[in-house]
Length: 284
Length: 323
Ligand SMILES: Cc1ncc(C[n+]2csc(CCOP(=O)(O)OP(=O)(O)O)c2C)c(N)n1
Image (tube, rainbow over all chains, first blue to last red; front, top):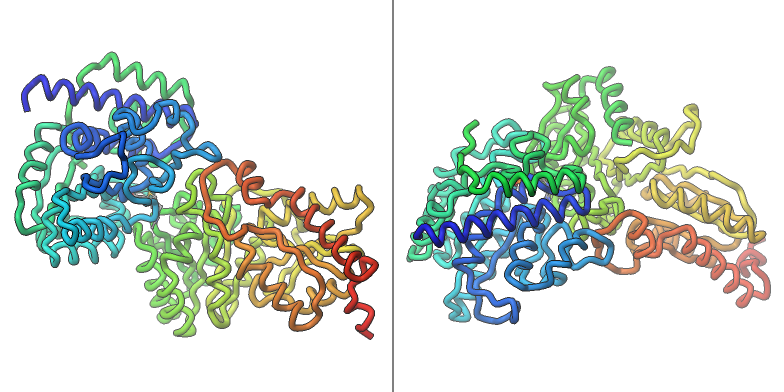
């Protein structure tokens, strides 16, 4: 990745982050923490890797993404709106009665959403199904999957881990948004998931671990994953829950917060001033 | 309501060291952090793993404890159904399962989190007690009843605060509905936080129109209070059920079953008409799923006019044959 491309991606991510904060602030409440930690990975996937087209969201041969931690819908909506899947004006209808943008991803309401999610743990299985269907139909495209670290408490995640490796799904590239927090507190305090690398490894996946706010790190990992021949890939992203939203970042109660519109706008203008965000990793 | 719930559990646990609490990463939502502070050694946060939580609760019960296990009602019911069914109920153990944010009260969490079917699936588990309290007093009393009921229970819990309906001294018994208001023309049978309040409003609106409506709080969905239903079917000739749930397999069905087997009075059901949930504020959703007091009033009027049309008066024909 050259410096121009990096700059473009960083600017885009900043825009997505601001849009997400703004639309949650406009509503007044939302899953800000887990929405902020996936900004970079979604930006990178949709700007650089995913073969999707806004004019034909349902086209048969395309890459697909399952946002298994469905409560991060708002970030994905901003990415999709930015790409032109639907008008940006829709973002202000987030969670309003009758909306096409509900808090959790819904494939029947929102153009560009490939799977309905919200009940944690289920996305891995549906992603496996999509990857198997691609194999059967000879569709040479990837299925991307994003799961949470708290979500990784669910038994279904590990049933899927076993199955994807069993079927040698090299067309499945998964990410764990390892922001170290769930709702009730730190993952290591509530229900420890460590050693994540060793677990996915033991299940037979190609495992990499990178800074989930760093485009160059993630790019290298995705490139390697795309060229893996026999195994599904798990890219563990070290991320910060609430990243970039000054009122939320690193706060233990940042899962689902009330956010006034003024606070949201203030956060957006702070992002503008800072310019390039320092990329730092959260060590507990 | 969740504060009342947590406080009641603390009071129970102070007297009885068999009481234990399980959560699935929704402890803050359930409001039970205070329980954990008071009884850390009797609190287990199982993480986002509802099936495991309910299975562990069954094991705790087999080990002599009285476990209360909480999650959002959608996950407590659907996500852990087989564990609750087999490890809890089939094994004849003693798991007290509590589902928060029932029906439209899950608001912004939307369709995935909006259970309109939990009572339906729970009602099909043999011997299970299924409850939905409507105010802080009934919640407290029914949690205590549940703790000392010998067997599993499932309770819907409204998290937000609610106005008090009952006096502190009111006694509650599992399976015995409460008559909130007597009446002669029609009976409104409601369950739960949202719909009992709507039924009370509807009762006043009907009163203005000269219609005398009896109102029953059916806090126990199973076992259903057959005696009370039949008493009011005979007395008023027609019934409207009001539930924050599918019309099928919940309160409306339980009342329909009771009536058709014993005394087929005309029934109209206010509830969700075979639809999935969706996001929105409570007021929007009340209208969207046709659950408002106005909808109850029109169901009641429809009931009265159909009886008039069918029998020449608003009396139910069965009533004439009854003696
Ligand atoms: C099956 C299921 N159980 C519980 C919930 C409620 N819930 C929503 S998000 C969440 C915590 C998820 O933590 P994590 O996966 O780490 O997400 P993040 O911190 O990235 O937002 C919980 C328990 C749910 N959506 N689905």
